[in-house]
Image (cartoon, rainbow, N blue to C red; front, side, top):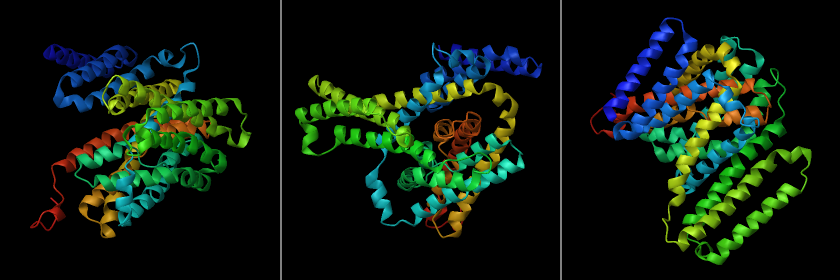
Length: 426
């Protein structure tokens, strides 16, 4: 079975390459989608390549979105309404994994965290302006390039730091700090650097950030405590049931009560947050009643998050397919340059101020790998501009590729300052 699937994948990739070489791009859609889908299935079946399966699923759906956008734009309703809730679910998952204990530990020696956060917010938006001007992007596209630079690091940076023999605790801490600072820092940076390209409302972007980040992450932290906390009340069924009911009531109140226009942006996040808290409480009671696994959320949430990421990106690509065909290759080149500058300045800037090789690797990854999903969400929710979401789409996919590449490069190279006899890094 494995060989049959692998052979089919190879043939599909060959057919795709031949059709593209002959200039028959329109006919390459079916073999391309089949090739990436087959590679994803093979990766799932072969344990050695299982980690690559998700990446191939993403590419399979992206290819389908580019060739057959109608499959993802109209499901009896405009699928764009699903984009923000899916991003919130992803951020909720991030909230369940954030390690506040590690964050507090790293704060005892905050040099690395502060340098990482300063570089992440200080270097990349400036590079965004430079890259946008270099490629002469139109204003709405340029705003998206600056926006991705002004976003915090993504959750993938923590995985890449681990693979690259970096300081995972430092990586998680920088991600946590920059994410929590985003509702204030990102709108301020955008107002300062991009307002002449597209009118930026600081308040609207700040509230959108709370809606997309703080509320779902807070719900995730609460749910993590409900499931794994040591407080006595989380072990009492009546208390957990009461919290479930109260959360449902709070959700209904939020739905029913009209919010002032100035704060209406946070309403969807509050509704979803209270709903998720209530659901987790109810499922916890059911699981404990039937003696189910205590870590059920850790088993379910990764799959939910991965499905959300795939659909989230696919729908946005499908909705913006025509524009991507015009500027896609330029955005790939721009993202490669922007990303490379982040890696180089993040690493050597950290070394210049005296950080270890391990910490410098970590900060390099944190600076270069941004939260592309959040960038897309802010472009759509805060800016209300689909064209501004194009750069985060392309940059996000490129960062997955480049992050994996540099992590694999560093994985086999032990930091030389961790070796007793090696004066320089090999």
